Every structure is written in structure tokens, then in C-alpha cells.
Image (tube, rainbow, N blue to C red; front, side):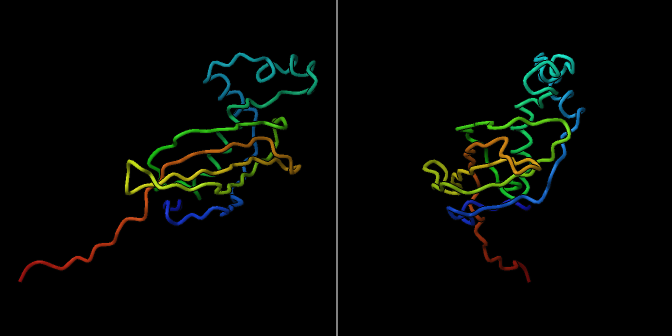
Length: 159
């Protein structure tokens, strides 16, 4: 388990995730087709060339999913109860085939769960950044995480 428990986080904690990912044409095409998105900017090279971008744009929902995926290993892997929601999602710059992405995460809010005494909600600000240091995606993610399990002393039973 690489993620942290709720009570191991503090507001202001920041992670520059080490995993990077270069977006390929196959990534974009498969994701776009799997999600039934017929937008020509994602799948038609000629239409994309005629656009203001002059090339294929990577599907924005893939961009978002990649940002979250790059963050999971060091934030919620093994400690997640449930993702509760995503807020303030923005994509301030386009992503193109061949761009190399990296992600950062910052804890912006913590609150204990009212309904689950063994869990709490962490709100992360995730950012996805390309090789030109441009933020291409940003959001707030609220995740319910387990608290650190209590360690119980066990006494051997028997003769």
C-alpha cells in the first residue's frame, strides 16, 4: 500500500508524483472510441489540421483520467473507501499526441466523516502539467479515506 490514511495527511501536504506518461495516438484513439466520442478533433487528422490547433487534440476526459491515475499510487492506493466527487475541473491548455504529462497533488481540506468514525474526507487539488510546464488540467477531488487501523495487542491463547 502506497497511499496514506486520512489521519496521515495535513492541509498543505504536496506531492510531485514521479510517474510521467507520454500520451500516444493509440491512447487517444482507444479512449475516444471506447467512450463513443465522435469528435473529429480527436479522431480525424484532416479535420484537426484545419482547426485552430492544426493537429489532433487529446480527448479531455482521457486527460482528466490520466491526471487522477498518475496521483492514485501516492495518495489513495489501498486506503480509499470511495471517491466522493470532483469539482472545479478546468483544462486551461490543450494536450497533443506526444506530450509528456506529470501530476501534482496538494491537500486543501480535511474533515472527519460524520457517518464513519473510521474514515475521513481528504480534498486534493490535482494538476496535470506537460513538458512545457503548462497546466493542462486541474480539479478538486474529494476522497473518503480510511483512518489508520488501530493496533490491538494480541495475547496468545493456549497452554
